[in-house]
Length: 492
Ligand code: GLN
Image (cartoon, rainbow, N blue to C red; front, side, top):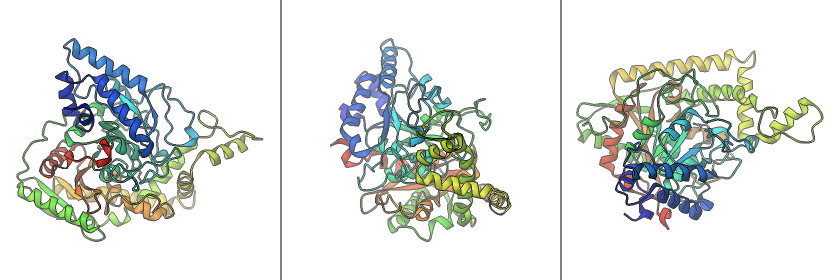
């Protein structure tokens, strides 16, 4: 296969080419950098590149292959790393001015795992500042454009990670998901995006947004690639006190299992009102596809979904206001000049260093946590969060997997929601509850709408049931065959 074409394929196909010595890992990495050179000015997927590291890693892979040694399943596969995950000796900015001069002094646990598996990191992917957003328009660096249509958003907050994979600037990516930031960009860019069970993947070295919701996960072209990358990053980590001490299965083991008798519940509240027509019919078609495979389809009602955005924006902002208190200009990052007093330095540093959306969240969160309002807002939100979790627990007594669209509509025009934060927040109506409940959830691309933009289906499973989730996703992918589509601009 021609190397230009190879960079748009799955890791599984690239691995075959590496092992058959049709192409070397260094050549594959260099070809991906050529692609970055030719398209990234238009896309804006990367904040910075990590070329020395990528080529050094690729060289190690080639040495092993040439010596006939075994290589890990994703060794030599080019990866985009979201710019809120530390990679030692390289910048980690979280797309914020306040971290614009920050160089990671240590590796995140997931970065250590990438290194152990000899996975070349191509660069640090652009994102919404501190992962706050749904469109990647909140980046202090630059906006990211959707490779399927450059006038549309790629989704956020892991927009750079997704755009890089869709545009052939990486084969796989890591993003982080606090309320949908892996799944929404997956949906808008026609990719698989998986948010694992809370605690499945270590958060050590991930810049915290809302610690009880944040989780790192894969963004890939195929379900199998997502399973392979989840194999790499999962596992207990004593450096993260919320990391689960649970065995990690091989997530690829059940991918091809047939679905006879599997119970799939479609979420009534997310599958009826307010969907774009093409999204509604894609959901319907997916349900029919599952039926034809012998799965049992059941209607599930989750009435608390209507409160989920409100609950999320209290909890997430409360945690963010506390997490972001550390950015004070003292220990690291940007520091305002021309200041008179210590207090003045704090105020000016934060006023100049944070963008509007981050400031909005800090103010909201501080308000929700202040005495007098704590019981009315924060405590109520926590109580509702428990009820949302109970609803899921009950649902998973009846079904194996839940189905809904990932978003009621496809990618929107750049600029169309920036003035209206509430309508931006509503794009996460289908994704947010998985973070509140801690359950695994993923996006699977199922087709294009009439304007040629990808449509995503969301599947969710009970805690630690990623293997089942990936099986149900794989079967749909196999039937839909969407994973063979690439945006037309990718190879021009
Ligand atoms: N869009 C949501 C927010 O703005 C979720 C972001 C995320 O998952 N990091 O908070």
